[in-house]
Length: 550
Ligand SMILES: NC(=O)c1ccc[n+]([C@@H]2O[C@H](COP(=O)([O-])OP(=O)(O)OC[C@H]3O[C@@H](n4cnc5c(N)ncnc54)[C@H](OP(=O)(O)O)[C@@H]3O)[C@@H](O)[C@H]2O)c1
Image (cartoon, rainbow, N blue to C red; front, side, top):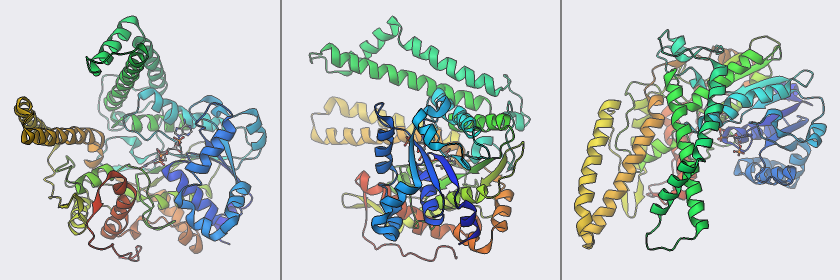
């Protein structure tokens, strides 16, 4: 048994976020490599307010252990797999965004007084979530969990953050804890109108959410939402009050969400963050820095987590996330250009590297007043250029194009326009589409005009989506900074040889062209394309090469 496996023998863990992408890979790694772990408690949100423990267990059975990621464990253990899960894993109903985690007294009793590791993986990863939701989960959530951890006698607390908490940077981003009340603009020495204060921002976000909610319920606002709802229905249709109320309520909720989401973005950008995600994750780190109170706190900051390189299989991926909308959109011919900077660096890390590194960091915990930071990144040792990535994608889609109907889609090279050029180009295309649509409209009874109108309307939707992608992801593809990973590298080197193999996370080992063309894009194809009604031309499956060697 490896040293790391021995280290975890008879230990207990409390983990959040196990239904998510990284969480599932982490749990698989634990059950695969650390069979002598005593117990893993998984905080899971029940999808029903009644009998929450049972509801959470049912949910976990489907959302975690029903996943194909556990296939190789199922093969290893056969019929004993269910028994293994029952023996090692205890599902706990709760919610990270509430103080006390919403744990029931029965649960607390079962958890007992011993816990070796408390690991926070859960977060809201939407870049444009309403600010108060992100604050509750990404900022206050880690603090609630830290307070929970403090009730145990010798816990180590591990928090998964993101490398982008430092916002817009052009130089090296070091593995240093973010201090409270310091914003990216402060770090860059830039002046700004308003002083940034962590506690103030948290309170402001929560107060704003309350006031927006009350404003949405005033009589005048209710009238507006009902008017808008009536306009959404066909004027000839007789409407009952129930249908109108339901549509008005949807409009109200959408309005509240939009206001809070826009505020999150503008507040974040005012202080030098990209969006409410990085802003609220940064404040989460700042609260940990302030409140860690002597228990070992480890902060792990991955960059952009993509499909697995090797474990549990090459190309494990879930969801329509991170780079997938852009890379797939390129393959589908829906993204004819994107405002990334040709020379910028895009920092990808495979999800198995992140899960392995998380486990390795736990073996190094030391009592200290300051949290220790580990960045899991590729840009410092093996940078991948944005234009290189797009070129690899172009080559791939040229050989294995997507097709709609019988037409293969061969994507063209991008021009890599600047953001200003890109916005002008989009506006110009939209004006043309608008003119085209207004010409088609009066003669839409003519089948050719109707078909053309539909085509133009579809293009209009694509351009709107493109604009939204540019707003959401644009900052991440115009970055020149590199993320230092000295702590992570030294950690890897300090592991015994056998553990270095089992818990592998050396970014130098990634051969980018192979990874993108033989692992990541095929993973996107397997996980996302089929469900979207596109398929690839049958030019053969990519070969599975030995991925760790170039
Ligand atoms: N994905 C990336 O590229 C990336 C990059 C850097 C860092 N990270 C960090 O890595 C971590 C995992 O990301 P991911 O990509 O795996 O995200 P994900 O797939 O969206 O998973 C998020 C997890 O958080 C849980 N969660 C959400 N709200 C919760 C609540 N109120 N209480 C308890 N659990 C809640 C979700 O549970 P439900 O199923 O109940 O919603 C889910 O298990 C996050 O901390 C993220 O910030 C991600």
